[in-house]
Image (cartoon, rainbow, N blue to C red; front, side, top):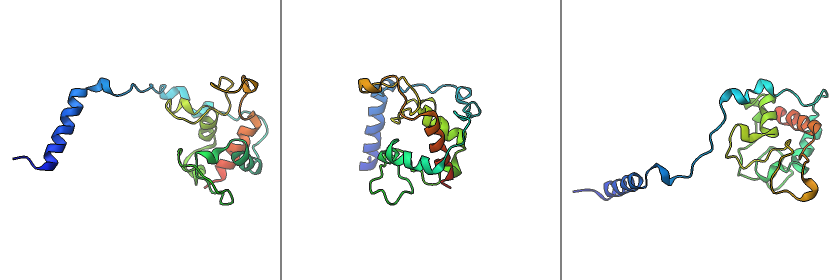
Length: 150
């Protein structure tokens, strides 16, 4: 005689077997690792990033707090859609941070995070078409700030 837990497990296994692999939505294939070699992600400008300006950009222009928790206690609302950015400078090198800002879909094609330095954005107001969200120097400023979070 089957226990209730065994019945539930058997029913779930049967449902998965009947549905088959075609029931799940197809996932986008990530590029080969060599494609996003972070050593290719050199600074975008000759001028070093300014972490103070970067912190201001994170709050005001990049709107990073909409999706991420960060060590900015004076800002009341922090999102939880993306990973926390506390200590991100300990986990990622500046080139890796830059890549995630410039084009995060290279690393994860399914990410909801937008590219902050691509001109081919979708579903934007006409006045913003063909523009980047951040300038090259602003990307460097944000990278400099995030690198301080250790």
